Each structure stands twice: as structure tokens, then as C-alpha cells.
Image (tube, rainbow, N blue to C red):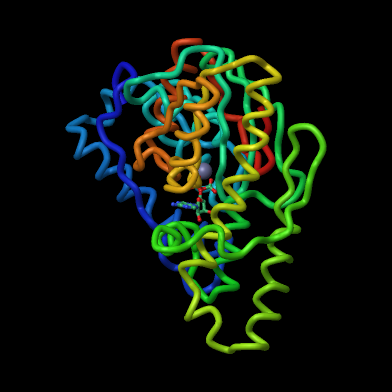
Length: 315
Ligand code: KG4
Ligand code: ZN
């Protein structure tokens, strides 16, 4: 990353979790350990930069899985110490939002960001690059988890979110409906819907054991429409309440085609200007940690060698 421009955004995907129906923490940290040196080496090579030219190291302090965070934190601390350059801690969720500043067009402040990932579902009021406030969030599961767990019930491998998206594109979203949990204010709840889908599938499979195979596209389209509807209904409520028409989405689930399409329709009727990151900057990536580091570097926000990983980091 140089002057706010990403030189290289290398991603090491961990396929080891596919057969387990979710991320296995121990396997995740082991894979981080194996990948971190070759990935950093390759990123420097691709960017044609020598490590001695670096002016700071930014790293994810949290939130996330402790084992994986520890690998990154220790590596970043050692590298900053060895090169005698500043160390910058980054909040993973804040970085998802700042991914909007990697490429143009960039949102104008203040804007609302719906941050939707495997671990979080938040509506964030963004006042400046580094001043952000969570104004609504889930009280239980994240929406990415709801996608992945529904996919698991359908027998799809982890992470199932992108597969639900794929099958949904061929399906009828109005075919089935699932009971939604209504929550006060700007709060979300996604655990009820998962149970609703479980019971729905159990009942249908009793009648026809081929129910999933025969109706996969329609089931996926209906699940996706329900989840997207829940997300956008609260986002609209937040936008009206705060009288903000600059709206962004971020995080892994912002790659979802149903969410993008319905957001565009809502933007028309609400008069919003919307911002959707490039696909490579939706799911977890190093570019977003780099851009967050860039703004913190400009603000002089550095941390010392005593810093440790923070699995439940807030902002
Ligand atoms: O932000 P992210 O890469 O990692 C976390 O910080 O959690 O988000 C991963 C989540 C997973 O739950 C994955 O299934 C979901 O994002 N996801 C999608 C799509 N692409 C990724 N969910 C629905 N549709 C997609 N196209
Ligand atoms: Zn993420």
C-alpha cells in the first residue's frame, strides 16, 4: 500500500474447513502459521517493494479467532521491531468499512454502512475515516452465519453463503416463506430463522425425501430473499431515522447478488446514493487492513510492542 493505493492484495484461502461445516479454530491458526511468511514474501515481490522500504506495519488486532489473531499480531510486532518502523493496530470490522476508500467512487461523510460478515451484522454511522459508531447490530447470529448454517442444512459445503447465492439466481424467491423474528429498534436476530428453516426442511423431507434436491434453487432463493429483506428493512429504518442518504455495504455478505439487487431497488425509491465494494474487497482481504493502516498512519495512531490480540475488539 502506497499513499492510499493498494499495490498487491494477495489472499491465501483456507479450504481445510470445507469438510467440517465451519471454521475449525485450531486448523485456522495452523494454516495462518504456515501461510504468513510465504504470503508476505509474495506480496512484497508482487508489489516490487523491498521490506526496507516499508514505513509502517498494520495488522488485525481483532475481532476474530484468538489463535489466528495471535499469529498475525506476533508476526507484525516482530517485523515492525526488526525494521524499526511504527506498528498500527486495525479493527477488522472498521477495515471492512474502510475498504470503500481503496477505489473510487468513495462515500461522502456521514454515511451509513451495513457491515455483514460471518461474525457480525452491524449498521454503522460513519462520520470520518476513523470515527464510527455502531447504531444497530445482531443480538445473536450474524447474517453470514445464517447463510452458512442454512446451507449446511441443505447439505452444502462451508462456506455456503456463496452457494446459496448461486442457486438462488435460478430460483423463485416467493415459493417458500420462513418466520422472521421481529426485533425492536435497529437490532437484528437471525437465530430464529435458522430454526424455522430446520423445522421446515424436516417436515418437507418427511413427505418427500427428495425435497431438497428437487427444490434447491427455490429454497435458496426464498432463504436469501428473507435474509436480505430483514437486513434492508432495518437499514432503511436507520437511514430515515438519521436522515442519511449515503449508504454503503461491506463485509463478506455484501458480495451477495440478491442483497446488491434489492439495495439498488431500495436506493431508487429512497433516493440513496449507494456504495458497494469490488468483490475482492468484500470478503476478508489484506487491502482493507492496509487502507485502514494508511488513515491511522496519517493520524499518527501507533501502538507499542505491548499490544496483544483482542478477539472481542470493539470500536
Ligand atoms: O467478511 P468475511 O469474508 O469473513 C468474516 O469476517 O466473517 O465474511 C464471510 C461470510 C461467510 O459467512 C460467507 O458465507 C459470506 O460471508 N458470503 C456470502 C457471499 N459471499 C460470502 N454470503 C452470501 N452470498 C455471498 N455471495
Ligand atoms: Zn471479515
